[in-house]
Length: 367
Image 1 (cartoon, rainbow, N blue to C red):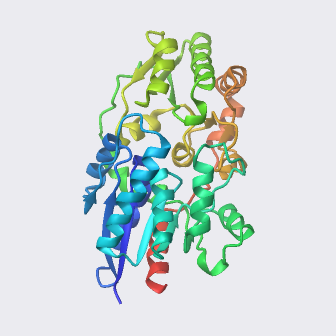
Image 2 (cartoon, helix red, strand yellow):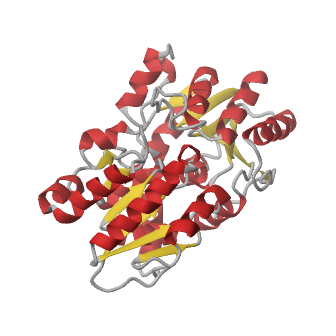
Image 3 (cartoon, rainbow, N blue to C red):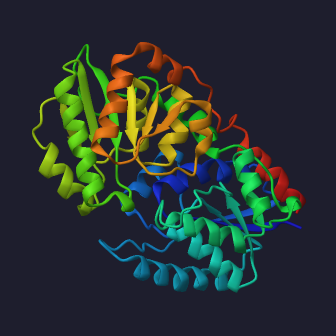
């Protein structure tokens, strides 16, 4: 019988990684009826991705409210998503990653005894407050989901250690690699979103995580100043997240600084065009840790721990925490030591081969 699969997304990273799955499942209309539900936890950034992937949600809850608390968002997602479940009656709910949208949707599906399939399952830091609240979100989803699609062997091992039956686990690779393959033709000839200074090495920065609000964000900003003052051949580009906790610090410390350009948030293609031109990336993002190795760009991870240790093990990324001194020291090393830089830039991408979505579709056909 044809399976009714509801795919739920609320943020830009979720849609980036679910879009290839949606596109793949739609190739099998005899097997799947695909229903897209957007919570719009992040309204503007989500809309950018819908345009890029040429997708339209079947229902849009439009739940974004500026500065809403986790409690408010969680309760709104639970009530509204549950109403849609009652109306549509899906056989399987697909969610991705570790957002509030993903966790609450999985829990709501559990309450309705609907099978949930988790894309990018099994990631763990084993520290419930890093990243916050994502680590607990992942653990809750891992407990209530029926089907688990970890991107790597480490994810498989984490799930097995938590008691998930092996028959419900399929290692797929990460769908972000599928997404990059889909988008790559759109990058050719696409204009840069900012004018770069000829002859400068580009450092691309993203920093927005909740656990980095306050003093850690200040440390990050001050380290960027250190780097810009030390290296005249470097240009730092920082697309600033709209969260006021991020903007307050970046505007205070970085506005008007020489060789540092603050940008409004970029759409995904604009960001990838810059990423491909980057010499080095400093980030607290999870997705960037997976994307950068495709383009052979070394990544310094400005977090205390990462749920993506495969990049660390492969030597393509390095955890530097949020200490001003450590960030500055590690960046200096890569900017001054060609051998150290080359050892990071030549590693293989450990996150997949671009066929993760196909593996998921074949698995879901059989369950």
